[in-house]
Image (tube, rainbow, N blue to C red):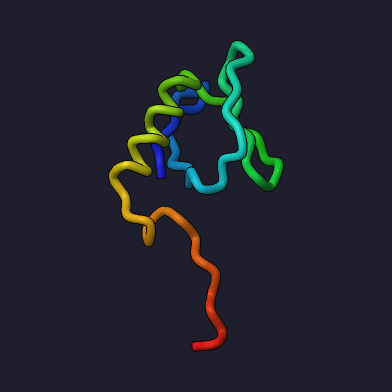
Length: 72
């Protein structure tokens, strides 16, 4: 998860595995895979760097959803 700041100054954490796109329009708009959008103060470049950092720090088990194997 990464911490982001709304335009009213409140912060929240967002699960990055649900992010579909990050756009600078010029405000930053984050679109999730379910279509929900967030408008945030954070720069798109900063968010991209945080996402990269998150994936570099984690292991595949912690960052990549794995399908359940029913054959076990």
